[in-house]
Every structure is written in C-alpha cells, then in structure tokens.
Length: 602
Image (cartoon, rainbow, N blue to C red; front, side, top):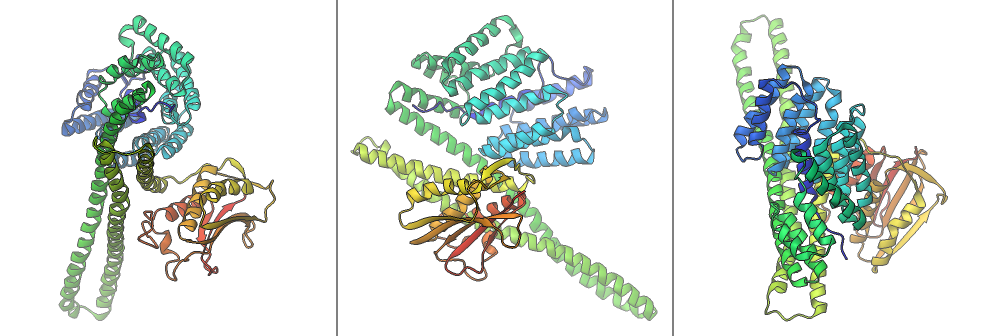
C-alpha cells in the first residue's frame, strides 16, 4: 500500500505566514504603540486579499515605520510579509527577486543577524516550486546562520525541514518536529504547541505509526478543550482526516476532504482514501482531477517564470537600444567639436580629443558588453522556448492521448493493455517532472556558492553503485568499470551531487552510443596529484570540432532530436566547480567521447 500523499506546499505557506506574521502569545514585539499596531493590522487586513496595490502600500508603510524606529528585525519582517504575499499568489519569480533585494539591503546595513531570514525564504520559495533538494540546502544553511541564542528563531526552520522530508524521510521529519516542539514548550507558546501537535498527527500518518498518531490526536483534541482561543486550527481538518483514515472510517474521511479549501490536497487525499478502501474506479477519477488541478497550478507557476524572465530581458534590450542612440549622439558630438578645435591651440585640441576619445571608447565598451548580454539572453530565450516546446509537448501528448483512451467507457482494453498505458503515462509524467527539476536545479545552483563536502566516500564503491542500473537496463551497450585506485581509498565530498553528475555523464554516454562500449574509470590525475578523476568513456558519435565548450552552455544540444533540454552538462560543471573540481571533455580521445569529473582529494 502506498504511503499517504500530503501537499507539502500548503504546509510551508501556512507555517511561514504564522512565523512571519506573529500573532502568538510569546513572539517578540517591538512596542505596543498605536502606530505599530496600526501598520501591522493593515498588513494583516490585506494579506489574504487579491488587492495587490493595497497590500504593497501597507507593507511599505510597515517597513518605513520600523526603519524610522531603527528596528531592523521588524523592518525586514515587512520585506518577508511582501515575499510571502507573492508566494501565496504564485508569483515565485517576483518573490525570489524581492528576497535577493532584501539580502542586498541586509548587507548594505550590515545586518548579519538577519541573513538567515533571506536564506530561509529562498528555501521556502524553492520548496513551493517543487525543488525539495535545493530547499533543504537553504534551510540547513539558514540553520547555520541563525542566532542560536534566540531558540525561537529555530522553530520555523525545524518545522520546514520536517515538512520537506515528510514524504521521503518521515522518521527524520519527526525528529525535526520534536526539536521544534521542545523549543516551543520551553518558551510557553500555547498556540504554537497545538499547531505543532497537529502537524505531528500528519507526520505520524505519513509514517503509518498509528500509536503515535492516536497519542498525538488525543493530545491535540485535549488542547482544543483546555487552551481556548490559543488553540491553532491550522491543521484541524487534516488531523481529522488522518484520524478517520487510521480508524478505517473512509466515508467520513471523504466528507472531510470536501471541506478543504485547497483542491490539490482534496483530490490527493481522495485518491489515497479510495485506493485504501479498494474503490479503484473512484480513485482513478480523483487522480484525474488532482492531475488537472496540479497541471493548472504548474502552468501558472511556469507562466509567472516566463513573464518575469521576459521582463528582465526587455530591460536588457532597452539598454541595447540606448547603446545605439548614445553612439549616434556621440558621433554628432565629435563632429560638433571640429570647428571649435580649429579655434584652439593644437596642443589643447589634442588634449580634448584624447579626453573625449577615451570617454567615447569607455562608453562604447560598456554598451557593447550590454549589447552582447542582450544578444546572449535573446539566444537563450529562443533556445529555451524551442526546447520546452519539443520536450514538454511530446510527453503531454502521450499523457493526453492515453488518458482519453482510459476514460472512454466504450473502450474495451485488457488488464495488460491498461497496465502498459499506466506505465507510459507514468513515464511521460516523470519526464516532464525531470525537465522542470533540471531547470529549477540549474537556476538554484547559480545562486548557491557553497556545497557541503562532509561525506566520506569510497570512490570504487560509489562508481560500482552508479553502474548497477546501467548494467541492468543497457542491452545494446557493454558497460564496463576500471580503476587504478585501491578499494579502501576514500575522499570527502558531497555524495548526492557526485551521484547526480556521474549519472548524467553515464546517461549521456549511453544515449549517444547506439551500440558499443561505455566505461566508467577511477584514477588519480597524472598532472594534478591532489585530484581524483572519474572518467566516462564511450565509443559513440563523439563531439564535433568547435563544439568542445559549446556543450557546456545552457540549452545547447549536440543533437536536437535527442531527449533532453541541454542543461545536464552545464549543471554538472557548475556543481563540480563549486566543490573545487571540474567537468571537462578529453579532446585527445577520438574514438567517441570522454568526460572527466575531477574532484579534490582534500
């Protein structure tokens, strides 16, 4: 039986609203004067409305009020309110830009103690966009940046870590939540405590730990009767749904899902409940509704990203136009100097000429750089749209076509055919998810400059693990392994990132080798002795002369008809360099392609 699926995005948004808009019994306050109360109430008033203009004005007044008081923590809360408002309205691109501006403002004001808030927000934004690995990295970095002498600042970080690990590592999620609960209890936060206990019911449900679920549920309901207005209703319906599912009261659980305001959560829960109840027909209908809602949300997110990118590109293009205008104006300015120069001494004329020539050259150089950036942005935009059109449309057509076949009551298909269709739909869905994850990953890695390298790994053992699935699935290629390293030889690095890079290199080698040999090798670099090399060698079509560095550019594809969006190699090189290494093409090898991942041994 599958583990329950719960919408982590809703939880993150709710938790951050609670944290950044303190309405609790023990949150720090910055005075209870009339002006402070007024600006906070204005922000709360418009936070859940669609009146963007009114909310932004309220948030600006909030910031100005606390900046005039010299209260930087609450001044930055005004930024955070605005970022969360944008997130709640699916303006992720806008939210990330504001977060970056906030971080720059913190640096300008030397507000080092507030850095963790910007880092935390980046994690939130990436988690809502579906990039959980990048979100985890930001949450963990925020945990390092936060002032541990103020333990209440850790609560939201622990809860957000629990949130993103709930589906994949529920036991770890429970540990993070318990840390948050310990801090809450020590600080007497009754509202926050009831909120966390409700969340505990949900994580216990994800773990299928019925004993913990029942204990947490009874404590949650007891709190409702004892703490009155301080009781959190954030997860109330979710808690009731989980409890009814645990008690096999599926009908009541379905009724409660219809009370959820988030339709994505509603249909996810219903799919799970019907499946557990054995009603596959209704489970299928609920799954179709869930997919439709999720696609709609993803389209909104993707549209917001494209609009934001286009806006940035338009700014660069305007700068490019300004370059042309300035060049023309400068030319006429130089011509205007000619009659004046005739009336001046020759030496003075030459001095002015050199001065204006130097200024003209400097401006032309600056504008040339801006023009080149605009042209490169335009090229990347065109490549991106072309790749997305091809790579996403194909699996979407497959999903749409097969969905129509399955949903048609007059279609007579066998169980085997139905299973095959389900497999094809699942495969196409995974392709789309992988494409989007690649895009999110490359954009996220551009803003991260440090990668933890505390994993001690055996080079040979890791390489063999990477090879196993390729040896099992690749029937048209001979997959080999070679190493000059001792089996006990180990280095410290980031195992997850190294696995991603090697899987990418191996996948490319197999994709471009129709029939031949693909070899993964481990050895010490002959020249740079402090580096270990993982090389992936194939006997495929190879890389054409002149494309040796182009293949590391974003969206560049050697073969436009092969699967992929042209982000794998740029991302691999970017991450390798962040770890102190590199990914290079061995141009001396002519029998196919050989890519080398170099990693420092210390």
